[in-house]
Length: 128
Image (cartoon, rainbow, N blue to C red; front, side):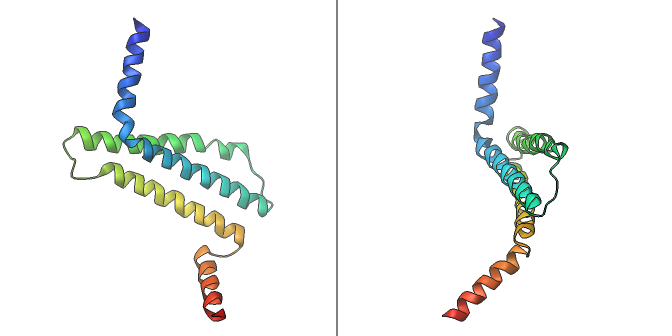
C-alpha cells in the first residue's frame, strides 16, 4: 500500500515537472562545464584544487533547480502565465554560468576571450 502510494507520488511529480526537465538538464550541464573549465584553468595556473570547493557544486545545483521549479510552479499555479518565470530563471542561471565559463577560458588562454576572438578575426581579415 505504501509502495503504491509512493510510486503514485513519484509518477505525479515526474509528470508535473516533465516540461522543465530540459531546463534542469541544461542547468546541470552548464554547472558541469563551469566546474571542468575551472579545474582545467586552475591546474594550468598551478593552483591547488581543494575538495571543499567542489562541495559547492551540490548546493549550487540544488538552488538552481529549486529556482527553475519554483518559477515553473508559480507560472502554472498562480495564474501568472503571461510572465515566463521559468524562462527568466533559466536565462539568469545560464548567463551566470556562461560568464563564469568565459572567465575560466580567459584564465586558460591568458587573455580576455572577446579580445582573443577579435585578434583572431583581425588576423584573418589581414591575410585576405
